[in-house]
Length: 210
Image 1 (tube, rainbow, N blue to C red):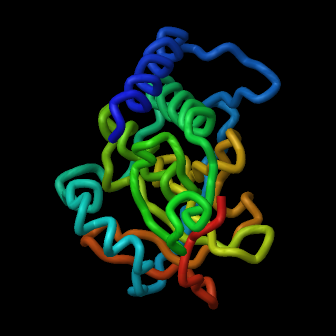
Image 2: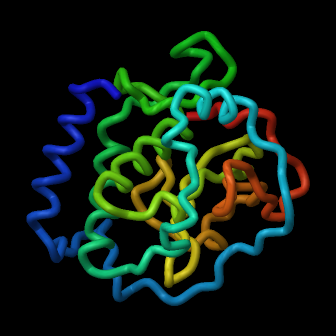
């Protein structure tokens, strides 16, 4: 990861975490406001996105599944503060740009090392930082959806004791999966370096929008 971007995110995150309770603003969400929700149902195996396979060859540790880790995140005020802070800071720090415009390739997954990325790069960086902060990677799964434009899009699913929550670069609001308006296609497995189906009928070939 680019040292400059990572340092910027870490510094701003550290400042935010000092404010343990997080002041309530028009955009702020509180842990108490989250209802307990049912998680998305896994329906079997699914084919991975091709760019994810390539990503895992270069970033094996980011794709590894440790089955000794918790399968769910226990949401506490401290954990919630960390999630909210990292989600907002990455959304603010990374410049959105499609891989075609940025790298002249249809789809590439990475950690936005140069400070530029599209949807999956935002989510991969969030997961990297959340794992560094102590959250179980196994409970944070890259997820492919069809968005409001009918296009392939990547979000990060946090599997928690309040249900499946979605981190998205299109908004700072953290929603229960079924309230996003997206069609959920598939996500990384919690049990192996593989993907599982969430029931969406048509899978996109890429997740290449911003």
